[in-house]
Image 1 (tube, rainbow, N blue to C red):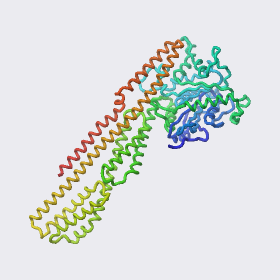
Image 2: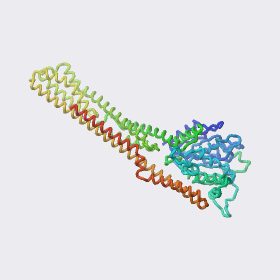
Image 3: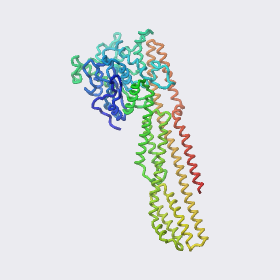
Image 4: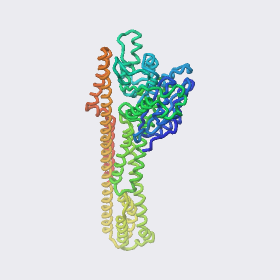
Amino acid sequence: MAAPVRMPKPTCLIQNQEGRLSVCPEALGVLRSIRHPVVVVAIVGLYRTGKSYLMNRLAGKRTGFSLGSTVQANTKGIWMWCVPYPDRKDQTLVLLDTEGLGDVDKGDTQNDTWIFALAVLLSSTLVYNSMGTIDQNAMDQLHYVTELTERIKAKASPGGSARGGLEDSSEYLRFFPSFAWALRDFTLQLELNGRPITEDEYLENALKLKKGDSPDVRLFNLPRKCIRFFFPTRKCFIFDRPTSRKNLHRLEQMEERELEPDFVEQADRFCNYIFWTSKEKTLPGGHVVTGHLLAKLVETYVETISSGKVPCMESAVLALAKMENAAAVEEALARYGGLMGQRLCLPTESVPELLGVHAECEKEALQVFMARAFKDDAQRFQVKLMKTLDDRKEEFCRRNEQESSQRCQALLASLSVGLEEKVRSGVYSRPKGHRQFVGDLKDVEGRYRQEPKKGVMAEAALQQFLESKEAVGRAILQSDTALSEKEKQMEEAQEQAVAAQREKEVLRQRQAELEQKMQDKQRSYEENIQQLKVKMEQDREQLLEEQKKMMDSRLGEQEALLREGFQKEAKRMQEEVQRLREQSASVKEPSWMEKAMDGLLTVGSLFLPGIAGKAVGLISNLFRRL
């Protein structure tokens, strides 16, 4: 596996120019080159709140993302910096620094909401950065979170939930990141009712709901509900001012010892938390996202937004799966071709020898496919791979026969040079010449059989060679004056019997080869079933784990709502929990595996009998010739 990508500096991933979002090809190229898992940390917040400094800190640098020192937002669009993940081999940390929200100079702030939505869609950890305390003004500034369900659809199918929004927030949990709130220049004492509290307790207290149903209460509760329901994994960090106001403009140049010690300790604690708790970006079902896949997600979401449509997470994942599964088929075929080229030396001495090498290479190719493919629900791509590998195997069999035939024909031509010369010079056109011809022909056959590495067509090539000499042999027999007519008839009958026996032996060999190929197809099908079962079991475990985490978070939120006296909201949460339980129960049913494997099972019932029928027909036709 390639070493993690190390970018020397950030680059723009998504441009925001004249109110239009577009993807930067250079940044996409960097992501496409990353073939191992990525952890994506995005930061969002109002402009001029120090977001870029925290991201530079996560990158282990003083400079990188532009800090700026004016009252204008400095970062435009979304900028990306890929660095090796600390203490995690073969992982890349992708840092996304977003355009400052709420810049009054932009006029139209519609793209602010899209920038926020993209940060949510692309990240595995989302950091919201703001100044001061969490008060109503801070919540009002976080109105972007209340618009997520208008900007993002969870499911595409009309059979999905029609409730949407907060009433179906569980669907969003499958896609949404963990959440951390960074409070900058925090000056309050962390106390509640005269007792000290933690940063997390401060956040949870700020997210408590008000009772009532007036417009003001609904407006107060909405952003708090969104954070609680969409982001069950939450963390809060407070930061003192890093230095005096007059020094902020040169923050990039300042040594760590020049900063406020409390701020340095707080920043280290923040970075350590992000490093230790941030997880690989995953798709629903637990499929890990590589940089290559992340690039496709970026393209899909930005193209959808630019076309004026609302991104649908389920549709994006399915489109991604289709592209990735097609690539998985090609990668598996390339692995198979490479392995066969290394391990197979043509011609082989027998068909089982070739089939054995094929079986090993097919198994490894299938493992390559299984490792990369996901959401191949009807096994369309696995079936395509299975059929293509079978075609490739048949092509190797044809090449094996062709190379064996060429080698055998060349060998027979070399061994029969003397015999051909005697035929041309008339050596056999004399009394007892037929016996000499038969003896010389047997000598050629004997020496031919002693030669090694003739391949699978050895008998067929010999049969063809001997058949080509039958007319010459009959002519020599008829001209041999040393034999009576009766002796000639007996000789001819004997030769015909020997020829028939040879043909029968060749047909028997062909029948055995067809049966061996049928057995190999059965083995191949069983190998596909076995590897699919293993993958489906892994998928089921991941799905159940995902469901459990969602249920645990919903149950925790339900308990909190009950403690706070919000019976109606708690009841809705219980309904979500019940739906999750029903989904988990259906996944645990034995029939789930059968339904999940239905595509491959159907193909097997159609594919294998067809092969068997074809083989039986070929064998019957061959024996009719005897």
